[in-house]
Length: 215
Ligand code: ADP
Ligand code: NI
Image 1 (cartoon, rainbow, N blue to C red):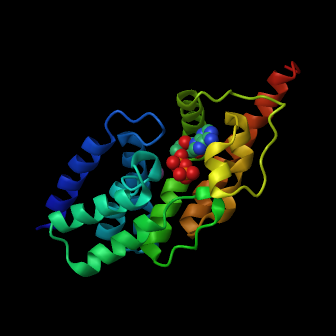
Image 2: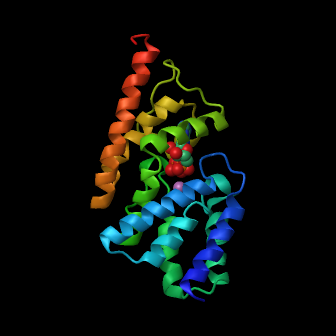
């Protein structure tokens, strides 16, 4: 099958799978990650097909959208077989998908340039103005408060604690989002993250000034 056809079919598959999600994994998240992935891939000289396929599929295996992570990973594998990709491509894409999630921070680093790029693009979509919007959308969907000074920011949490314990939208910036700039893999990613970090810092500064009635 031609690469363009494979991409078009995969786009449709992902759209169907994610339709109706409001935990921050809607199709437009995928579309933004795909665009950013392509931009960085050109700058960094990576394999565009592998990058775009992995960007499209990166959330299909997410444990939040599947009964188990294993079922999610098999779902992606079956799709790649269905569109008749060769073994080498399947392996390269699966390696990216299996290592994508943040999960409290304990995941080994991405091995390939393509993996580093998709991970950077996904992280960029969690920060900056879009990141702020997604955080509050996710919090609303999960019934979390905007902020509660009596709920402490959690440090060094395990994967289970990260998922289960109570937090707030504002705490999420300190537990995860402000750390992402330091985790960027590529030069392009680092450059783009810098601007987005400043946007979040400025937002938080204003948030607390307003919270405290200072302005
Ligand atoms: P993870 O990388 O931990 O799997 P996701 O990328 O699936 O998290 O999260 C989807 C979106 O929801 C992201 O924008 C993320 O920052 C946001 N989000 C995740 N967990 C929380 C939380 N506990 N509170 C607020 N926003 C969250
Ligand atoms: Ni994602």
